[in-house]
Image (cartoon, rainbow, N blue to C red; front, side):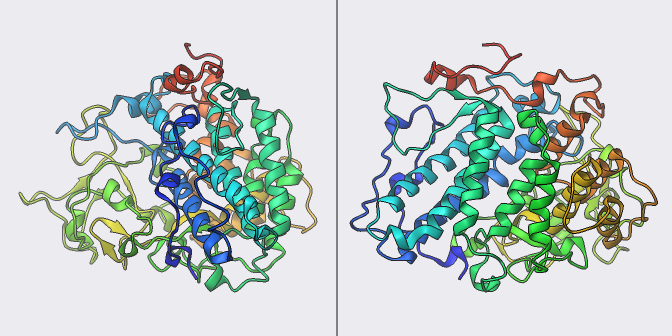
Length: 511
């Protein structure tokens, strides 16, 4: 069954864990689940693990961690509007690479991530204290992998972070900073161990097990981490990244969907052959929500897509992102730009005053006009079921196209494979799906650009730009100078250091 169909038996205190990050844990009621009354069956235990999935989904999508993964790149911005809407200096500072430790968006992202880690810690303690522990090995492994995912995002964003594996922290012994390379090793160890007790996609009924983590889902997470290992640890792990990809490819259980948009439709659920990791969304059952269209589209799109709400015209992309696509590339059709029409392609889409909506690139970061800002229809509203302004499109974490691109890059950079293939063939497989011109040769820049085209707004671009160096050396609209390398990680939020003097600010940022 889908995890959103399982009745949650989490106590209220578990859902309020870590709201202040990892430094006020002494104020929270951790470990309130009683192993004598809970987890006598796998269903009872799974109902609590669902809570970890739910919080992780808000780390990966919609919430502030996703925003800080996209802000500061050449594919995502939210300009302030001339009407006064959407202006937030915190976001603008991330977009322009001038973040300070007091940045509220980064502060909320920290809280979100360590909330997920704290909930996972509490669930793990209860699972491991259960008299039925021996029958819960799979769920324990699943929860450890989910916690490791939280730490992956913490390590990626802030580098050196507190490494906490207990549900209750002694207020007289607050956590200290753990070096980034050691956090990497912890995540790697936890994920590799979890794989041993997780089922493979080859042994489960995908329709009923979806969307829980399988071995292949954790292989995919490790492939992503290994691809960035040199950034995190100073040591490359290209072959290890390829091995994780080959573990997935060799199952023969995944393939590319016929159209890239199929991954993001309302029907993208357990029948998808491309999704490796995702989160179930069913707002009618109060099980998560997908608000991409609400935050992204222009107001007249209410008429174009027959929406039950008026979109808020926030999330936008740059001219530089649009220009990466060839005109015949089907992925370009997912971006709204230029004069807009109804779905018939003929009838102009007009404002109430009769003026046709003509979308142009953002010209003013602080006071943009209503028609400024190209829109990425990552989660198509066509065929979607709505509950208010919440869509039911499942949220995508990792898909097979990314695995092919990871393998291509790691091979190109010198990694070895047991499943013969060439970087060029792998890149062209992804390009061919969207009718892009097949390449006859390949450079690292081609690989970076292909990842940007294929994975736009999926939370990868900042990591990719840091790995390729363009985050620092590149320039684009509103980012016209080189960026200091210390900004490859965000500052630890000032309020966390105030609450816990054992934390040390990242180099380059003011104390």
